[in-house]
Amino acid sequence: MSEQWRATAPLENLRRRAEIFAQIRAFFAARHVLEVETPLMTSAAVSDPYIDAIECRYHPLPGQQEQAQARYLQSSPEYAMKRLLASGSGAIYQICKAFRNGECGRRHNPEFTMLEWYRPGFDHHQLMDEVEMLVGPLIGLNDFQRISYAELFRQYLQIDLQTATVAELAATTRQHIDIQMADDNRDNWLNLLMSHVIEPQLADSGAVFVYDYPASQAALARTALDAEGDLVACRFELFVAGVELANGYFELTDGDEQARRFQQDILQRQAEGLPLRPTDQLLVDALQSGVPECAGVAIGLDRLVMLALGTDNICDVIALPFERT
Image 1 (tube, rainbow, N blue to C red):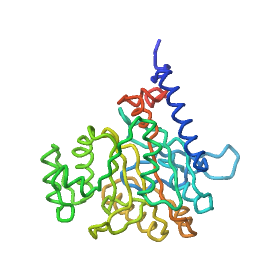
Image 2 (image 1 turned 135 degrees about the vertical axis):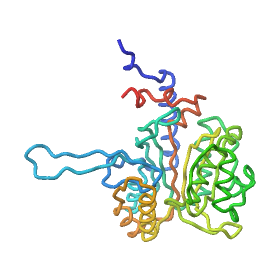
Image 3 (image 1 turned 135 degrees about the horizontal axis):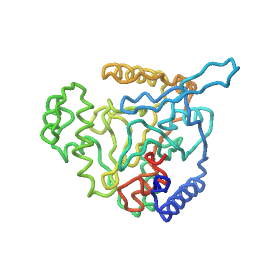
Image 4 (image 1 turned 30 degrees about the vertical axis):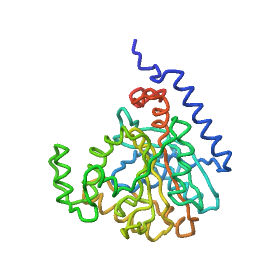
């Protein structure tokens, strides 16, 4: 008889997982942050070229006049939660399932659990403070470092991002990675250096906030001039033991700029031969109607539980991972 029916996570791990979720809810209740729910199925997919949404279809029952419709399983509740902010919700958080194609391994499951929250009146530095207050006690850390993206590249690769050319970034990448890639997209080389060279070196550094990413990697964050006068994205990522745990933004609230970025993503998807997905006009409309200045962050809760339990396999904290569904 097959044993595929069995849960992969030990029961004591699932109990600890439930305790962590209860602690998270208590943390936000004490701060009067409202718990919300938004749809898992959406009519538009995330535009990020590096995230592939999982598609599904709604079919009417026989005899009904409506048409079948394509839907996408959300890769993040971000777009919908911003519509709630525009509706006057105030500070909100959500614990929900998110879905991404092609992400399956020791640290990934195509269906995973995400915590996301938004704080009107906060910038990304204030939100880093709150992330630290939440995460520190859950994983037993009280020392969090902060370093800018540019300083990270100076410190670990001796690269000055103000002057480094695409050719120089490619040459540095090939010194560390055996890769045969011809690409004039600067961010692709930066992403490779970050994920394959720098992140592994953060494994012994405890908890590290990396902030002020290149403006070309703003995603849904606003941009601003840093202390050196360079245009940067007002966003951060938190790495713990070399594992990416959180991604936060001082949120873009300009609807016209958001529409322009959606169009840029479409052009990049076309250039790289990636699937084209409908973009979210409802988000643009919400931003144009008025979203309060705020900061928001997403945390992978499966990874958070992994760190709390000291395991490097996601199957140890999920009852029934993808292979057993």
